[in-house]
Image (cartoon, one colour):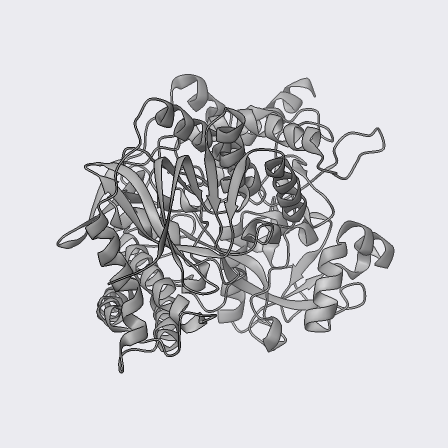
Length: 583
């Protein structure tokens, strides 16, 4: 086959142009390494822009008693103690510096009357902790990182899709990718690669995720030998739009409840008081999502299968000032004026707590030279993520993965990529275009979404999960025989071939993890095992891809040292305990 392929060499290659990827690239480039970023979409349009409510960091600007210990406490408690305590400690300690760094680079946060960065309350946070820019915080973070990266010597490749990671012996060697515009191929050889491609919410039909979230990076790394962990832990955000149909799944930021909005059932009851009498509407996301689900099952749901969310009592001026993006978005997309009327919400797939297993300090995966950060990496969030922790996660661990890749690249030679492997991958990628018959990627995607909703949704049980595993294994076989009509130019059907293959692989990992975890913990709710196991459940289910398929085994969660474990013996968040002592 004669194919015109462009070849590039870099010290550090970052796959993914969201917050984690840009922060990793900044770290490597500022330290003098030749760095490139590959983005599936246009620069500035990554899924990070859809994070609205704020970035969690214990600055203590509004509640001075807040500190890293309290943030650490809240994160581990919400994670149901199967997260990596080392990542939680690093995150809580370094998040304030990463937010202040953004401000130094030009980010414009909302302000307190004294001129400090304003912080708002959020679900399951003990204090007002989320630094925000109205309800457009993710967009401001991407804008700031994008402007910062433009001042550095970083090559950015836009609208390009990676399809395979290459290795030189056991170490990473780079990747092959194609331009989505016309299908031209490019090979990127790199001493170190950072995966920062986000989650895989599009495996489900009702999701707040945009089209990019198909798990590309995690699937590529899994095939290259990296391990996955906690895949069964998929977060359902409690408040996604459920009506009108055209707006179904659109995220309604937790900031609506953080600014005083509340949930009601069809009988006008503020039902969250039953499920969490202390935190109520600002309970953790797993608790609120299950609360809405249970109300609907009990016949107390709204006309379209959800709950009412109401913030009208705060007044139009307050709402438009504090939640301008939410007001404009729902008015334009759903014809709902949240200053005048309550609206229907229901749980929607939002975030993946599981992902690539990484070293807590460097972001290194089990493949030498391969690093990961952000939503595609596991460890920080355990069984349930706190709202706002995703944005501080991408900043803290994006930087650390960039630094880890930088240090690795400094001490290694440029690897080699086998030409025969390149040609084999080119042939594989082009094969769907030459088939005259085969599976339709759009139909396979629909089938996948139906399987995931029916067998790996918010409520699970062993029999349904086993049925789902059989169905998704059959689907995985079908993904190898897809056909795409047309040419390489502007062909979304062709792109969908690889998206579906990635999502089906990760969907199987989700179901396998859910089968093995025979308990209910955080996002994993099994009706046949309704209790959380105190000791036996404190494991991470680690998965590897072998020639015989996916292999899975449990590994005990690392035990906290006494100086951290004592924080939980207080029975309340450290800052609250200190306040109680003073009183």
